[in-house]
Length: 288
Image (cartoon, helix red, strand yellow):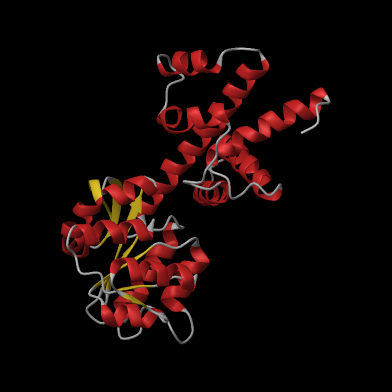
């Protein structure tokens, strides 16, 4: 995601000064493509830039890049703006905003409800949270990355919305996978079944994006099962904190956790269909 966002901004004639990744080879390759520095330290990215975009995997990674001992993004960060796009726990965004304020910097969460192609095309759906001043400062750049740029509210609020978006998306994905698998086991034409789904109450955005891949059992990764498990967990934690039980979200997370445990975590989230197909063969005695 981060690489394609950088490519998009380069196309739109923004000056890309530096890129950083824990995978040094990936950073070096992208830097050569963009004609910028491949920073060896996080603090180097901050020193070279006015606005810094971050896209990391999880809460721990986010805390590390902003609060790690020694090298981190907030070294000499006064006057800088950090736009943080990862799907992480809302409280982490709040904590990072406080750390940045102490360093004389600003942060904005810009949660993305889109995938890799949209990052390249500049058609991301961006949900933003933080101080409105930071949003207005980042808005001209964000409009080059997103077809929709929506300001949600204070820090952490956009992350809550993103957690709910992914929770519902994951539930829909699991439901579609089971529906198609049951249709296959019943001997139905899946092309016909998908068409019927699209014209009835079974229709969903997930059907549009993942239905054909599930039918053809093609799971090239745009959004991994491991990330789906992590994101469903964020929503479940929000629910627990409010005393709510979310049985569908919990069951979906259990399925994605199972994918990870079975070595399928790097498949696209649509690969959840494989669990149902696998269970079908297991119970029928077929070898898989």
